[in-house]
Structures are given as C-alpha cells and as structure tokens.
Image 1 (tube, helix red, strand yellow):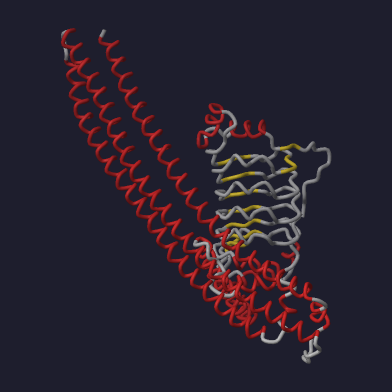
Image 2: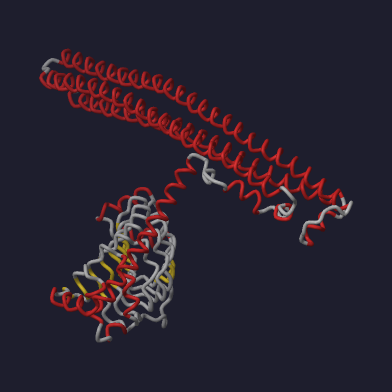
Length: 522
C-alpha cells in the first residue's frame, strides 16, 4: 500500500481564514458562500464543506458547523481522527489519503452513512460501534491483515458496500468466500457485486462456524436488551428522584461504608436486631419509591395538560389572526383596484387615505389580538406555576415525612445497639462473657468510651447517609421545577417578541408599498 509522507510539505491548521475561504469557494451549494460573506464567520447553516488538498495536519475548529452533512478532508496529512464531536448531522465523511493509524473519534457521528478511510495506515477495524447507519465503508489501501477482524463488520446491519482492496488481508485465498459468508447482506465488495453463487458456496463452507457465531450473537444481543431495559427503567426512576429506593440499596450503603458495623454484629442479639431494622427500613424506602413514581406521573400529566392548553390558545389565536388577515386581504384587493382605477387626484388621495386607515386598523387588530393572548397565557402560566409549586411542595413534604421515619428507625436501632454494647461491656468486665469474639471486636471493649464512640460513629454515619439522600431528592425536585418554569417564561417572552416583530415588519411592508404607490401616482 501507499501512504502520504511529510517530505517537504508545510503542515496547515484549520483556522477561520481557511474555513472562510472554503465556504466562499463552495458558495453556490446551499448559498453558504453568500451567507458567510454577509454575516462573517457564521457557518451554522453550511451543509457541505470541502477541505481537501490543504496539507491539514490536525482536525480542529469545526465546532461551528453544527448542520454539516458532508465533509471532505481527503488528501491531507492528518494523523488522528478528532474534533468531530459537534458534527452530529454528518452523513458523508471522506478521510482518505491521510496518515491515520487508528480509527477513533467517531462516536458522535450517529447519522454517518458513508465513510472513507482509503489509503491510510490503519491496521485494525474498530471503534465504529456508534455508526449504526453505516452503508458504505471504504478502507482499502491500509494495513488490515486478519480475516477475523472483518467479522466486526457484522454489527452494521445497513452495510451494503465495502472496499478493502489493497490490504494484506486480500491476499488470503479465503478472503472473498469469508466475507461473503460472514457479511451475507453485502452487495458490493471491492467495486464488484457479490454473486449469489459465491454466497451459496461460502455459506456451505462456513455454515457451522457461522451458526455457532450466531448463537453467541443472540446471547449477547439478549443480554444487551436486558441491560438496556434495566437502564431505561433506572433512567425513569431518576426522573422521579427515587432511583435505587426499590430495595435495600440505601440501607446497604449505610453499612458498606461503616467500618464498625461488621464488628458490632458479633454482639449477642445484634444480627436479629439488624434484620428487623433492615426489614422495616426497606419497607419505608419502597413506600417512598412507589409514592415518588406516582407523583412523577402526576407532574408529567400536569405538564402535558399545560402544553395542551397552551397549544389550544395559540391555535385559537392563530385562527383569529388568519381571519383578520383574510378580511384585510379582501379589502386590500378592492383598495388596490380602487386606487389604480381612480382618475381624479382628489379621489385618489381619498382612496390612499382609506387604505392607510385600513393598514392602521389591521395593525391595531393584530396587536390587540396579541395582547389578549399575552394576558390569557399569563394567567395560564401563573396557574401552571402555582400547580407545579404545590405538587413539588407536597412531594417534598411527604418525602421528608418518610425519611423522618427512616431516621426514627435508625435512632431506635442505635438505642438498642448501645444498650447491648453496654451490657456486653459489663459482662466482659465481670468476666461473665463466655462467647467467642475476634480480637478487633474485643478491642472495642477496652473501656466504656471506646465502645460508646464506636456505636455513635456508626450511628452518625447512618444518619448522614439518610440526610444526604433526602437533600438530594429535595434539590433535584426544586431544580426541576425552577428550570421548567424558567423555560416556560422564556419561551413565552421569545414567542411574544417574535410575533410583535413579525406584525411590525408586515405593517412596515404595507406602509412602504403605500408610499411607493403614492409617489408613483404623484
């Protein structure tokens, strides 16, 4: 294979000047050049970008091209795939004829369908998992050496065209059959259509190996589906702020980080005491979990109802606005006919004045309608804000009540544990304690202060865990409400501003049209 070397080439960086020049050169496409010239370095609407043959050493400074769907970076001296994370809409990417050694940096390109890494220095096909839509993959003239590596491409269910020509792996006599067997949906391989006869022979040759592989893939896929379902469920629980409360997670976390707990379990009666404590504690957590899910559903229903009411109000207002515009358009056509047919100056001036009055009336009607909508939505938003605030407050109040029950259980357990510890100490002092006890546990009973401090430290740690979980729930619930309400208010302000601007621009257009007619008639 061949690969481009540095030799005497002077490396370039992708800077604003290069990007400006590239966009202007491709101007006719999507009018990107005109856009850049008019607004300066603002490339958010550019769809296609050619940066080939520019001696680029590093991919950088492309974060502005958030709408890019096609990117050419071929015939440069790029060594690493990077700087593409913001190009989430990219469909077509050409990185051929560079000095790339490792496939990486493509995780954000989930819409990519066509990828060319032709003529680089890549020795392994890997790290393409995110490219689930991949249809065309060109990686010819690289260092791919093993047939087994090609099995990785089975995960791309839409892959139909593959180019591997010029790789060492192509020299393997089993190359074509192997690919035809392991990639049965492939249509084109190395610029040639895969014949059905080739596919049939390949299937027979590798039938048993593929069946075994399919079984492994089925197991892996089933496992992945289970994991994804669990993650989806966990994400839903997080939205309700009750993740991991449907079991003993909080209780276990209290004891997992408690160095004294395991020692104190050796005291007589403590295992039974602990089991009863855990059972009651977990029951409260599960109550909180179920309550949290129900409250989340209520909050979501309230949000859905609000947006339904909001959209109804907007639609009703839009229909009224359309009717006003339709009435005006009818008058507009009549006024235009009257103006153009007026032969006398006095009549013409009267018609122009009447039309000007019509424009003013239209402006007043549309602005009045908008102000009515603003007042209406203000009341709707106030009601929504009050409802959300009440729902969150009630949720927090009841959540605090349940957490208080957890603290009460911990306090009761602590009292019982301290009582057992003191009794055990008294028996040890009197040499009346005959049960076996590890040395590190016996060290807690050198005096009263030591054992009391150990029990209290355990208790403090448990209370801290409960307090932190409670604070976390409260913080997240309040934050959700604040962000939601702020978003609603900002959205309404933006909508009103845009609508008023739209009305003013249209009225200005009509006035300008009127002035033009006035001048022409004069």
